[in-house]
Length: 140
Length: 178
Image (tube, rainbow over all chains, first blue to last red; front, side):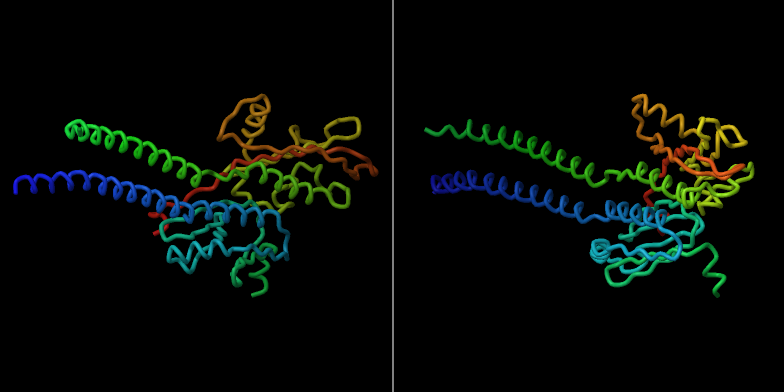
């Protein structure tokens, strides 16, 4: 009896460390993979890229121009993060483009053009309209 | 045949060593990924170039310099529809325009040409041209243009436009977002 008991303990002694070793390794590498995947679909880099791209477009455009920007990746990331509205804002007072693809923050970039800027979404595209300053107010 | 005592010791050693390897690999990957995804997209040079295009487009029309450019009270920002706040309050951009006749004489009444924005930027650009590397120095763009101007008859001249940008954008933290 004592011998059998000893033998059993010996086998499990050999088996458990191997199982634990494999489980710990699997856990570790899956955590790393999840981390890399979450970073890759993270909003920050896209918020920055979109904000700068939109600001460049505004600075380069002339009045009465409409500029479309493909925003499909931004919309996809925002949906993944549970955000469906207010993805892009134009702060007229501070002349800033603000992109928020996440509820936790966003990215702001200043543009130097003094024209009036209006934006709207059409499917996966962001449409930027440039107007002479005060033109909208004059019309209304 | 089997020295269980030694084997257990070996496993312990192996697991300690293995955890060390895992930690090094894990930390390495985390740092590399964070560095890659938090990298700044630097568009200051491009912005300087766009500013140059915008300015040259508005002061040169059909090859001629616009009227009033030689006057002391010429308002470049108003003429080119550029926002005053970002130039003179935020001081993130800079423009300098020098106008010369064919002989190379400065044609503006005011010394130093037409200047708007952060006047520290030209110095920063000079330093960079001399090989000084600084992450937070402005990025510049400079170009000459041959133009015609009407001052006691039509004449040919040259304008030198220097533009610079240090517009870097900002992350909006969660608290401000709230």
